Length: 187
Image 1: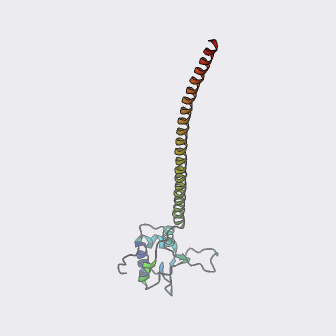
Image 2: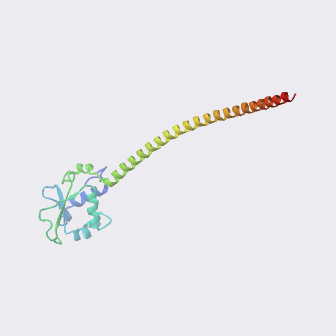
Image 3: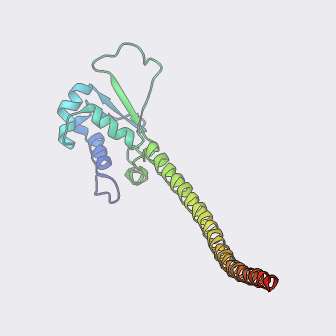
């Protein structure tokens, strides 16, 4: 296979692996080329996987396939006891024999939970920002009211001070009047 720029390494290796005629007894294209077949998982994982990947773990290989949107083709007779040499088929709409140009269309799946997690975090962040803005608005209203109360309080204290002075003045006058009135009677 030619170098396919923009195609992930896993897909390039998978194509080479399926297209390699020397391994057709363990992995090959289906007759119509719409999927590929793996026979004898044990031999395939021990003999073929290490030639293309850094492991011989079939479960890891299947997990990678799933991450790129490949699906196991399920047949009606599934559910019967498995044979050691059972053939497994994997299919992807953009992985077809002779159509390497389609490989660029295969994308690694983004975990739905990650996408949902990001959406939730964005929603939570928006909600928090909205609440912060509301609190800020309430704080500004409270600050305005507090300033008005301070000014009103200051005015009241000034009035109280003025009234005390007037009261003190009146008290002096009242004492003078009462002391002068008592002095006139004695004369």
